[in-house]
Image: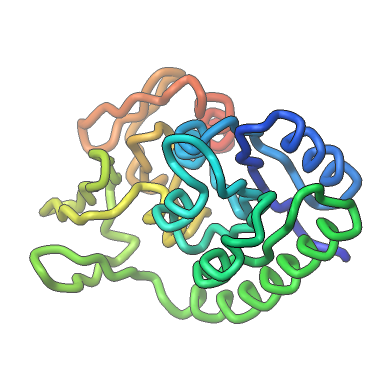
Length: 238
């Protein structure tokens, strides 16, 4: 099971023992990076806003926001492996196109099988996705009841307002109902940089930067503390 990059994952379960068991199993598998272990869906949402996550190990029966509700609300590019003590949710879990559905207690062998299934999907997806990315330098977003084409080269920066985002172009601003994490997944990573839970910037349009902020066309955007280390690592290469 050789992969070119680590797969970033989070574990979401309100039982600490269950999280610990999954984390222990995953520590024995190559190319899996556990970014966070979350006690509930709110913690998980916050993590997704700060990091690019590939895979979620998700308990279904959690207080306040269930795993099913959480899975329905996140970017569909993020894959789900459900973990639960209840068989009753299996059908609904697979209807959400989950990679797998694991019943507790979860053995290492069963979890490894689920991870291998994910790697098979990941490899196929990226094999099919790469040629499209090379051909297309644009995306479509829904605004004013239309699908609008936006060239990546025309984007200055992207700003988040809860479930809406503003895409700032040179001569206009487009507002669309979307999460910033979902839009981030559509952007070429070599040209854009997340500097804050609310801001993604186009590297080509940076006019200046400090340790605290980036300036794009006279607009100063804050670099948040949680992103600062990674952001400065990229900016200082220029």
